[in-house]
Amino acid sequence: MEQTIFDSDNLPKIKKTLINILLFVSSIVAVVLILTRGNRISVMGTLIVVTFCYSVLYLFLLQFRPEVLKVNRKTFFIMLTILSFLIITRYVLNIQKNNIIYIVPFAVIPVVIRTFYDSRLALFILLITIMLAGFMVPEPYEFILMNFLSGMVAIFTLTNNFRKSRLFFTSLMVILSYWIFYFGMHMIKNSDLGSAVLFDCLLFACNGILVLISFPLIFLFEQKFLLISDATLLLLADPNQPLLRKLANEAPGSYQHSLQVANIAEEAARVIGANMHLVRTGALYHDIGKVAAPGYYIENVVEGGSPHDKLDPKDSAKVIINHVRQGVILAKNYKIPVQVIDFIRTHHGTSVAYFFFKKYVDQNPDEKENTKAFSYPGPKPFSKETAIVMMADAVEASSRSLEKYSEEGISELVERIIYLQEQDGQYSDVPLTYKDISDIKAVFKKRLQNIYHARIAYPERI
Image (tube, rainbow, N blue to C red; front, side, top):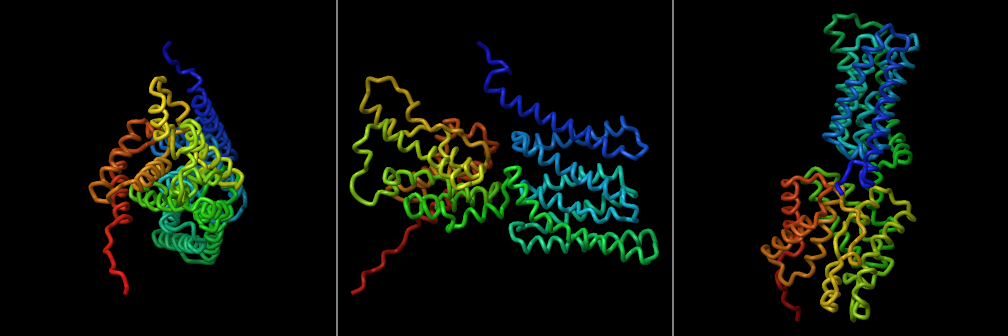
């Protein structure tokens, strides 16, 4: 029977798409009501313009940030951000005071959006918001240009937005950018610099200070929308975190392996433009499930025989595969964010525990091959970050079995491991280009060569 669009596998995607459409339509209606209330402008014309703006926003997300549309709460977060500032703008304009609109801190939009996504999306959301707000304010051209430039300054100065001191610097730069633009416009208009100018400058100062509310807003949105910021990722990556200390104490070999995976994966993420902090944190936690039975993993065996020597290959595979499920349970108990738990779930994808599968086949040559009992539950990696950690995990673990650490041997190992994962379809859901994979492999080769570089033999002391 031919597969149809209504197959059970497609139903979750259809449901998410319908919810996203509902969110966009609801937001469009709300924006039209906000813009037309108290204004003598055409409702139909406003509806056409707002619908066009939101259509462009949808296409932008579909093209450049499809992961946002895959999670309805992320879409709702963006819709809520736009609507909130339009509502604030409408409320402030009801206050009968000249230029009071200057106090609305539109620079908060790029600060918050950039914290959870990237600069490009932050700038696009800012632009959509201020263009829609321009229908309500006097002198819309000046309003849009001023807030657009100040928003760009906020983005440029947030290169290290996980540092609190950086946000204070951003606040100061936003104030200065408003002042410079404001005085420039006054000079163009040949306006007199009277008492109104001082009042407007005070409004801009208040505007810049209000940018500081981004910090508590970021933590609020993390809790309510299950988002994650660089500040939280850096906190989770601290070796003194209880779960990482537990891994280091109870499964020291696995902890050292995780550190090496984190180091090489972080560099690969930097090279291809993925989220370095997310990759490093995910790599540190990806094997925490091994604390449930550390002695069954070769990196934790100090001496003596392996406990797998006394087990049936199926039982051995069950123990090994179980570290994924145990890791997810443990992470949830320690309240680790879902974005980090994703690395635990996906770092083996749906691959087969081949060592034990091969051992079982050799012991039972007459049985029909069935990999189900030896396969990880998945899911497969679904982002660049989770794919990088899967690659780094497999490459780093396999590199420990090399008999000779030559440049050719390491290069062949990296090529073979990633090729096998590609052929197994583990990256079928990941937006990686051939160049991305090539760059990742180059980083792995260089890093492993640095780790296993040749050392001189020091003479013994007499």
